Length: 241
Ligand code: C5P
Image 1: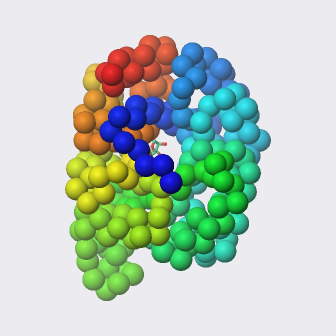
Image 2: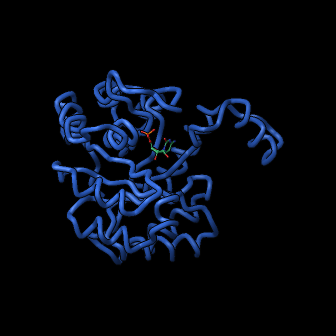
């Protein structure tokens, strides 16, 4: 498994949160920078399915299929193989699915060799507040844990089960980096200076996230909802240099 190093350039991943296939394809064809990762999430995948993913792969982009798998080990293993067949480079599963689920998925992908997509583990969704997380964990275990201790525990579990990387909030990077200096980290909640925060409450600029140790920055609306996405991407690249 090749680990990211601080010398690797930070990648930019554009979240394609569109609910119309024609709009997505027009947007993707307008991108002049082909060195991007494109993220297809649950909404777009449910709308347009594997065929759209194949189109993105064919256009030469790296693709991140963000379906956050969480099921019995056999189902996740088999689904991950179908994802690998699409030719994508990254996909997500929930670390809370447990070590067995992750290990079976990883073993099931071995046959893809160099074409094996990277497994990214999701710890605690950033949409949870401390209160709603305590309620949820309390319902499961009759106890209560803070978000940060759960994030660290789940990331440790993922590393034991040999995930390739984790998805985390930029504010969790420093904490995760202390125990896992070379783990691949994928970070949403990024806002270039001057962009609207939209519904993201705890954000960092691309430069701040890079300095905190992010390897792949997931950015949606600041790129997809502006008049000239190519200018925004160029500015982000300049900031990351
Ligand atoms: O438009 P914006 O830059 O906020 O989009 C961020 C993307 O990252 C969205 O696709 C969102 O679903 C995803 N994401 C997130 N927070 C997480 C996990 C994924 O914002 N914890």
